[in-house]
Length: 465
Ligand code: C2O
Ligand code: CU
Ligand code: CU
Image 1: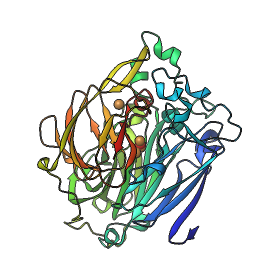
Image 2: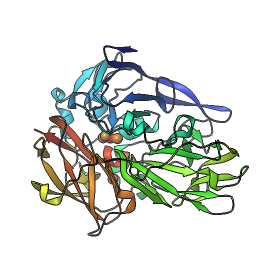
Image 3: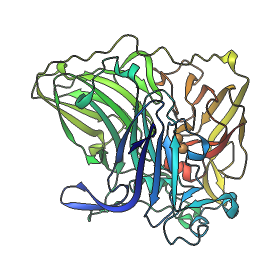
Image 4: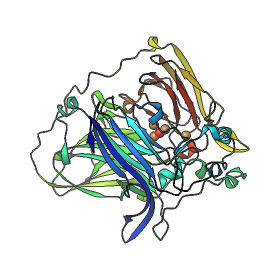
């Protein structure tokens, strides 16, 4: 629905049986009955309002990841959309020790539907929306609450990058299934978590053994022998990928990166391998003219083992004319923040620790508390944040994009190019990022985007004043 210069959508969250595996339906939690949820297409600067209805049996929270969104519409973890008949919003939430703020009912905003307004006054890019309910984000995303949202503008379209059917948004997730087709998820059971000897693989986050692309297991996509623009999103809860495009005769095709989480790079960067942490996006162009018609190009994950090494395959079906191009200059609007612009330097350690008598994942030694102020930044200020990690932690900031200044005391990686909203910290690694707190005042978040780590405390408030 389009009225008064605003695009309006109604999105109902409901349980549905989705055909993912051959011959069997999977009961899922969905946006509009589909997994992924419907892809929303928007123009830069044209506001979008979405009214979310909740027909699931549990409260939900919806966040638009990468959106430059006023705080009231950002999907703060206690901004619940309650289901019909939900009487005791507190009851389902006490299972997580150490989250003291939830004991205060006044901290919880509760409604049956919620309308979010997205100004989308931001660089065009691939955003995604997903559940963000406090303590329950990981199982909710796992059950299906994720979808894509593309923002476009005239300047980007004028570049001549592959478009239309030659532009493919690819949401990559892993899932595990029981024999009857239902999703298998190791329950976030505190009695299990508080017991000594909790398996390491459980604390590390939940992995599946089936790789889905746009909800289909290991799809084969037919392509023309021309350039394609792949808009890759890792929407997995915890799985990391190192993607490469491999031909039948074992050659690796160039992945020409044109964009990052927060839009176009200044200039293309040729990659052979793309490291892809949870929530990261890469915008890449692949030229299938480089392989014989009739052959295949497989997108493979070097970090996978057995069948999780495969992600998807392209079958090059026919020759075709290609009028697309990859210009040497893509964007001139990338912020050029320098260390000297920063009015403050902050340090954050992302590490395991004790939480409410059990195991948690902490930022600066503390688990998430919605009632506590962690960082207060002034609107318009430039800051440098120094991040350090014990194990893999993909760190995400709401509202703002940032640039990577350094990694492990050295220059950033080629894959750190451009404007990011999520940085993949590797085990034992430190990194420096720089950003400007720009946009809106209010309470936002930063957190680890390993969804299980997030639920186990690795999140903090970012107050912009
Ligand atoms: Cu993708 Cu705070 O989220
Ligand atoms: Cu986000
Ligand atoms: Cu983490």
